[in-house]
Image 1 (tube, helix red, strand yellow):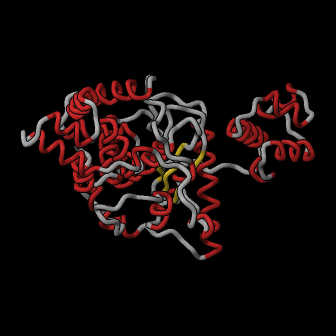
Image 2 (image 1 turned 60 degrees about the horizontal axis):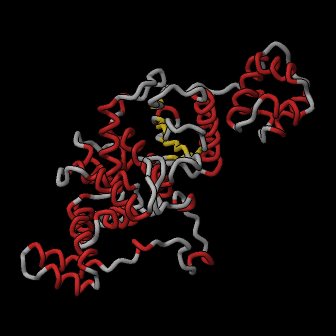
Image 3 (image 1 turned 180 degrees about the vertical axis):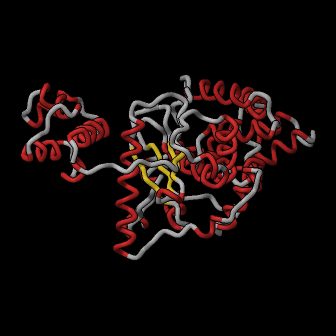
Length: 377
């Protein structure tokens, strides 16, 4: 095997493991100049040195000496240039090869036949048809998106990549897919992991002709369509409307947080849906101002209030764990909706006074006024 292949593999795996050259050199007992020569292909490491490097990088020896397959039928685009792009693609290619080998060995092959003939020009209609094909009720939240995609023949790989500009990619059928890869870096909210998986599924179903590894720049139109698909796939319109209406007596922020938890999406996904419906003109301002007043701090879009945990992305529930109460619930998970909803409707219809509403809800006049203002968003 060519030296350059070994060198590029060492560099690729080192970057993937987030090690510096200095750290690998120190851990293996070789000089920094020597490691640099290996990575550039100027010299070839002895077998014992190669084994030491493999141990530090937690890699098999064959991963360092074998040639990586070049993926072509892949949709990998990002808003900014990624220095780790080649590393990610190489890692995905090896994963797909290993996946196919295991499928061949076990006879348990992925089958996406039920998704192949899905077609609709409107992403929202396609999302509805996809849920129907997957036998998910329109009023049923998706609890395990990884398991669902795998059940219908879409392979799923999670990899932590230290980048705020890369969330995921999709691989076409010609390369061993369909497959989605999700960036599960711990600085990216779990809600975003879930949305990214649905987003990449949208690309697989909507943009079959856009799988070309040489294309690196995002297509705004296709990104919007994939976002629409993901939003309606995770939050079916009818159920979203029903849940939103049932919470109409709550403050705007409480409604958003409750609906987000119910559908396991980010608060931004809920706000975008509301913005899409054009029923409110200032959803973002309303949410952020109410959040700051309620919690006493500013919320930026990189953080998620009342977040999900990593195990919510791909739950592995044992019989023992299934009998326990969930570890993390929030106050928005326990809100009685009907009374507040009735209060709001009665006030809107001028059937009761504001003072009477405050009395029923056990609020002061000032608190009642604030609630009414929060309804308006």
